[in-house]
Every structure is written in C-alpha cells, then in structure tokens.
Amino acid sequence: MMDIMEDQTLKKQLSYIVPEFRLALIKESKVDSCPLYINIPSDIGKFVEPLKYASEEHFVSFHLTAKCQVIGYHVVSRGTLSEAIIHAREIFKTAMLANSSSIILAHNHPSGQVMPSNEDYTTTETLVKIGDWLGIPVIDHVIISPHGGTYSFRENHANLWADNEAGNPLRLKE
Image (cartoon, rainbow, N blue to C red):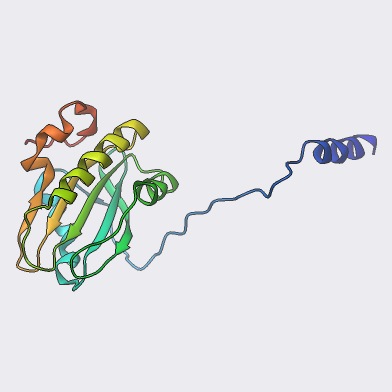
C-alpha cells in the first residue's frame, strides 16, 4: 500500500506545469489495395494523376517506407488558381508522424504550364536541404498539368541532390 502512495506522490512532484500533448496519426482507409511501390521514376506518375484535374493549385506529399512502398499521402495545401502556400513544418510534421523514410512532393499548375517558377525552384531547394537534415530525404518534386505534362525536379535539376546521394533510395538516374 505504501508503494502506491509513494508512486502517486512522486508523480505529483514530477508533473509539469504545462499541459502534455499527445500525437496521433489517423490513416484514412478509403482505398483497399495491395502495397504500391515506386521502383523507377515513371512510377511517380500514377500517384500524381488526380492532381491534373484540380482547378486550384494543390501541394501534396507522398510518404514512402525504406523499401519505397507508398504508404499514404497528405494534401499539404489547397491554394488558389496560381499559388499554394506551404511551409516545411507542415510537410515534415506529417512525414514524422507517418514514420516516413522519405517523401515525394507534387503540385499542379492549373494553367497547363509545367515549367517551374523561381519560387518552385527555391522552395524545392530548401525542402531538399531540410529533408536531408531531418533524415527524411525528398526523392523528387514533380509538377503536373491538366494537359498531361509532368516536370520532375530530380530529372531536370539533379544539382539540388548533388550533396546527398543517400537522398536517392531509388537511385533515380538524372
């Protein structure tokens, strides 16, 4: 009996003066399918296909295991006709909660133009660096258009990944 009282007293003495946060990941089970893997760069296309039908910019992160199985996605931002506001915190928070080994980023250009803007380039550069630092590498960032065009930063700007070959678990060829 004395041990229980001592334990409760100890818990009171060691309690924090601020509330505790508890985190939970809720995986929506809308899709019943077998595991899906990305083995070659062209495999990314089947995952980003729904983006081509959005009339506003959407920024989405796809989450992968160490064996490149896509375990889910997160819509990071739903924007306007010409932009989607994102922050690295929101992208990597989901990646950490999902226990992602790596991520692939994607967004659409409703205008039909797949060429990246200067903001797209600098954002990708920043997110690749942050992912490397956090140990959650960004494998690629793709832009998709309603006309079916796709632009891969990995294929067109390999220099963004030059400092970290570990961030290329697929060994994607630039």
